[in-house]
Length: 101
Image (cartoon, rainbow, N blue to C red):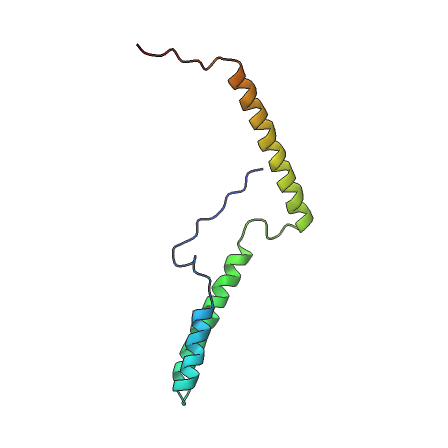
């Protein structure tokens, strides 16, 4: 029941929209004809669209919160069981390595 997670690219890790909004506001103050404002708004729209695509591609986004909680409980139980087995195997003393003299 392992879920693979896609690797994030360096440029997609920055999801802040605030700098682009700031640029749009600055352009609105400076540019009276609106050409630069239009370019900045296009950048903002592109960034929002990329964010929407990333969200829709996230693993588990199609699962309900209850299903996600059930998966989390199952995974936690698996970790607990594996930790118990690991402790059991460690206590068997089968892993004693003779020390080199």
